[in-house]
Length: 329
Length: 283
Image (cartoon, each protein chain N blue to C red):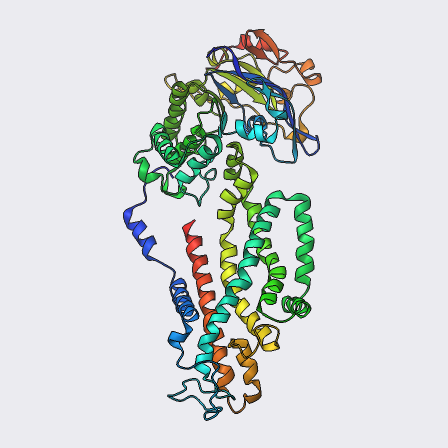
């Protein structure tokens, strides 16, 4: 497959709640290329998860989504229900933050894997059983035949996330949407799960959108990243570019708040204040009250997301000043 | 929650052996009741409808452990044969409300919105009337008899199941696994009946057990009022009604069928309690 062709193209995605009063996702555009891992980064409440759910049309009924989500040339947002069901779980799969609650507690694991196969493949019963065993092997759960008969409560947190991934991958999706897949797990397990996702990406040549608030995860796993703040993307680029030279004050602040191994110990920096609630987003650049680089235009107008180099976009009036201040990493 | 990928064998065996005690007792009573209901002639010493004018209103004795009634019929045999009718009442008066209520409740709970509002009004309308009064009204329109009683109970009774299921499904549909199901592209019906319902149905099953006990009481009440099983059929309510004129002199005609009602009701209630305990700890 052509590695540069966008597999998923999101354009002007906007998600509002409460009849348009609250804007959770504001004019978000990005692309994901085949085989690529895109990190969607931001603090809690920055709209990362809602973006992911909007792509899959999974926002609650009180929300309304506008814009375009092109998947293989077709707009998911205007697709018929039957087509949408074919895409969901068949071509695009999603895994969730809480492997404890994302699995059905009263059904054996096999039944839950089989559900996906029933919905998206023409396999017969024997074929589904064989495929389920293969999937358990693929995600690294030993003793598949026995464990398939067990219930979610008999699995540990890391193993449940593996089960969730097995279900998501059952029908060979081309894109995996991962909503903070490791946040609820402890650090050693996190690492295993991320490695698993990367291995599977290579093995199955799928793309991944990884939502996370953990920059360490982004550095370890992603090819490109998009930083979100208050519902907007404020900076995108390859992980190497962004880490080497953040051009948005918020990205720079995030990078400064991560501890580093191997260097001399120093004080951790934090970004003053908290992200604004949805009903009180400041005028101008939403980050301006917390920004050390803020100037007059920042308080008056919303900066455009400008392309300064191919696939490198920044929404900041003072990006030269931020870039000159250097990376805290 | 990261270690112990497999439960300890000891813990598992403990869970397996520890059946709730009410369930054991309740199920034993029900199993015995069902046996008697299926094979009444194997247990009954006499024909339940055979008159014996030589033994009118005899008290409990070795020949007639529960005594005889005013036609000389053996009360024990009649109580035993009544199991057939009363266990049928327990099942048929509840299974249709259970099934209909579960389906409607699941759909309403999942859909929410206008469907839920309308359903709420129907529930209000039905529970405003006392259950027995409503059933009596319907039976007296349709005419007395068991089938009409099932219809009457079904028309009213589904509401209670639907209300329980709707409330449970409403909780379940907000959980991540329901979203996960949608994210996997499953149809709404598949999510409702394949995923949400198995999680939501426990309280309805527990209520069902209690409801069967109530159905026997209701069947007996209607039998007593002459709207359920018709004489000379052996049915506990009918028997109690038959005995009411002889209460002072021949208490056994009414008391033994009454005890049978108590025992069977206890069986259902204990089973319901035990099931509730078992299914709750399983989560």
